[in-house]
Image (tube, rainbow, N blue to C red; front, top):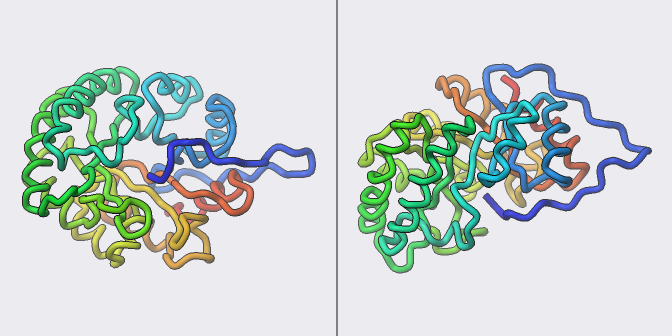
Length: 277
């Protein structure tokens, strides 16, 4: 996740042609993060539905029904509208009361609205060791897991890079997140594996997906460097990554999260074609 404000865009002039939908769904359900595209949410939903996507990520509770009315799933929701979402996560026990109440309140709403996943964060390190951070995350997330399981919703905790975008973020390596997931031990608490962030921090993306697949509940894409298009201008072979995700039997969503240097809807359609397996 990079920013919550809508990206600027210019699509819609008379001299522009609408991008073609990618041909079919394939073995992966594809989605897009709302903040990366321009326009009011109802219009945006109609346009991405027309491109052939199945979901839209990172909507607030008051927006979930807008996606549903357009025939889309809100594939990843926020539990609330709150500042400092990334920095104040489960690594900090002082945040637990807020985070647990927030998620346990939103989980039943998500179930009613057909939202399969809610996002959560590990939060900033603030001097804590990995062992301390893992223990804190396990203690907090274990109080959310039973509610999530009871309602069939998955809480997905995001892995982010601390090298470029989110200094001091503690959940900046897959091993940290996997250790938390193993100790929580719930199929309804999983990792949001952001490919862009983990490519920056550790690389070896395909091997990691294969080895840690049991802990991953959701994916985000983005080109390295710069979090732009996932085409040949960046360093990962996203078709190979998508094939690896499909081959491990992943049945969740892979959501595109990049800021296009070109026309955003055309870039999204191309990303969907690249990731069709």
